[in-house]
Image (cartoon, rainbow, N blue to C red; front, side):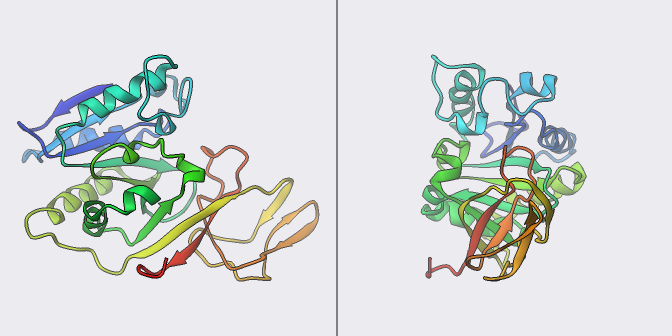
Length: 256
């Protein structure tokens, strides 16, 4: 783990590379650190050993290892050190990059989303799609479940670090004294993972509605039809083993 403060008493923690093969976070941190005008941030490059090996994790998924402990493997021991490093920060932005071709999205969890400050932070991020993960995915062991106020942001692995850094900067400014909001959010609540064996063709796109009764995949020569309306996300994400995608429903706040 590498920790660096850009200013004294930073208010914002920027975390990158919880997954060692997601190098975008480290690139964004280097970009932000090179700015002439320093932001009030503490940067944390998390899983350096996994980065060196270019793997997602060494022993266990770090973003499923919080709050961690001393009796486990590398990630279990690393998790409490990361939490300790972030203790003085008012809020956290955790940067991820996905192998899915989906649009940028803010990720929170069912428990975190109940916090007013987390919802305010989400409103400050200039990204329109918000994914609310349930316990079946994160198991309440992700980083953002164990900090006072934090969100993860997923970007395509091909995104330029400069453009992501600009989004992070704007989010920090929006969450300042005037609390500017980014309007027109779409909220997606995760239902469950979807696993399709022997799939030869997928006829669906991330965040695009699959209507009940419509064919969305071909497996073993047969079309698979939807039993109900759903929205697929993280289609063909390599980090989710044996999972075709995660299915979600679109919600309106107040009608969850």
